[in-house]
Amino acid sequence: MTTQVQSAQSGVGKVGIFGAMIRRDMTAAFRHSSDLVNPLIFFVVVVTLFPLAVTPESAFLREIAPGVLWVSALLATLLSLDMLFQSDFQDGTLEQMLLSPQPLYSAILAKVATHWLLSGLPLTLLSPLLAMMLFLPAEGIKTLMLTLLIGTPVLSFIGAIGSALTVGLRKTGLLLSLLVLPLYIPVLIFASGAVQAATAGLPIAGHLALLGAILALTVVLAPLAIVTALRISLSG
Amino acid sequence: MSETLLQGIGLCCERDHRVLFESLDIDVRAGEVLQVEGANGSGKTTLLRVLTGLSEATEGEVRWCGEPIRRVREDYHRHMQYLGHAAGIKQALTAQENLCWHAALSGLEYGKEIDEVLAKVGLRGYEDVPCYTLSAGQQRRVNLARLYLLPAKLWILDEPFTAIDKSGVQAIETLLAHQAQQGGAVILTTHQELHNVPGLRKLELK
Image (tube, rainbow over all chains, first blue to last red; front, side, top):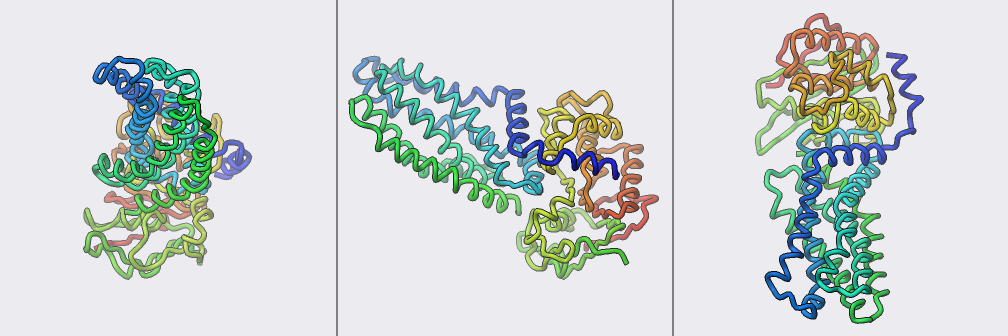
């Protein structure tokens, strides 16, 4: 017993909980890779079906491209929220996180960061290809990527609040969407507005500044809300 | 008398308008093993969750070394290991990876010690296969390996013997005895009779 304690103490601080969480979630996610590609496939399918259903005319597609791309990205993120806390709740590792002496704030930050790396980031990287299919001009594509880069982390953070609030419930599907979608709307408006402005040759600094402000606010405040929501959800 | 580690004062718990237990006083001292007994649905798991701080009691207070656990949460959780109803491990990860993660949760880092501990719980040769390929009892053993690996004054164990074979049960009993002799304490629920465990006390929930 004593030898255990000694060798253990020498290791304190070498591995942060942040790194350990990211490594664990990444490993688990890549071994279940179907969960990873589902939101991406959804994103691609929705955007590709649009020209088929509406019209292949380039002028019209260019007009609706910012909205279509952003709405699809938002819904794809919504679909991926299940992977945030649900499986951790079911296998009991979530309660272990709450019982850890390590700061839960870092663990939560790591979980949301992993979620973004596996959903928001691939969506952002995939978006130029789909934007070209919808005849979005180069200036618009650049702005689209930029808004996705700033906007999708916000979607992950806000989604995590909803996911944490509903994690103990049997059926979460509709409730989660109802909780989260209204909070997604400001991001959607400013982000697609920025892309539209960029295609029209208008300045986009204002839109981006607002998106940046929303991101800064969520990074600081959302983890606190998530921590509280998890404690409430697990106390039942 | 040895020092009191965990204390529950006037605990009362209500679930769905049903009182599970009320004005329950618990006092766990170093060197003690407290076995919580009771019929199915009598609130054993609820009581353990209240004692860990996961759930709040409807009334009453839980204290760690004399302080309410809400105020000393970090210090309390540093000295407590909880084995819940659920497996507590990720199916997609190997036993090694799971224990690494559990160690990180306690702020520790281990290397080859993890393999030694896995050998102790009878999982030599299963260190690097994903846990979903293991049997229920083996998965339980991965979770139990935490007790060997992570030092804690207080163990709170919810049905630790589930799916464990005879020799495993014996090993756990030895482990409990060892923990009590080292000045630690254990609170556990089980329907099994415990043998050769010093400092054993029983608490019956009605």
